Amino acid sequence: MPAVLPVLRELPAVQDLLTPQELRILVAVAEAGGFSPAGAALGITQSAVSHAVRATEAKLGAVLFDRGRSGARPTPAGERAVALARRILRLYELLAVEVRGSGPGSGSGSGPGAVTGTLRIAAFRSAALHLLPPALERLTARHPGIRPEVRVVRELGAGTAGEVAAGRADLGIATLGGSTGVPSGLLSGVLAEEPYALVHPAGHPDPKALPLLDWDENCGSYTREWWRAQDWIPRAAVKAEDDGMVLTMVERGLGMAIMPALSLTGAPDTVRITDLGPERPTRSVGYVTTRELAGTPAVQALIRELRAGRRTSGG
Image 1: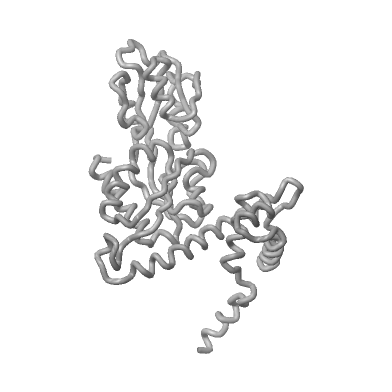
Image 2 (image 1 turned 180 degrees about the vertical axis):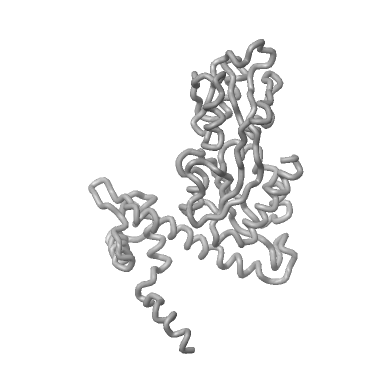
């Protein structure tokens, strides 16, 4: 016992711990943009929200919101606190699900030991269209109690990994190895290495002479050096919203593009896909999740299906 006492003395006092309601209020203020709308969303008064936020700030020793006439915006410390609050509240939600699923059973179906509950997924557009559906089909067939919720998130800035870090998603399908990297404290794994290819209108005599079509999410740090070394690639003549628009414009004969394999899934016969050779660029597509959710049955089951799907497709 003597060896344990110093550790116990370092633990925070009970009155300094944040309650689930205080965490909910932090999230509500950040999402509603003010104390009054947060109170309305939670069914409590504005003064109760204000009191709870002041108490939370006192416990944490930091100002979490900038107050103004236009509402309340999280400070940098507040952004971090809100992200962690979402993740902690998610664990509260999963507590009952995990306990109910720990009984004897096969881990499927609806009986004891079943994998159940909502599974929140963030994915970039082409992954949501082509990578996730077959994996979710297999997942829900094996575990009908799982309810997937998929949000399409652009791979710009924080991207899908940022959704996981902020507590808005349990798992993200992300492009790995970019300039921003995976946020600290998250776990990731590669699902596939995708080659880039030249795509152009079928039958065009000189596709490299066509204008270049591009979109903002394309050409991360994994392709940038290769891209700069190609003297035949002109500056982008047209920037589109996403890769789907680029492919449609190529089909219409408006230009050529350099696109990853996932974006070219199901490409029409009116376009031609040309290999860029052994030095072609590639991108890593993988998953991102938090350390606390990585061991949950639903997240583990989805990762298994994503890996199985890429093996089946030869990726």
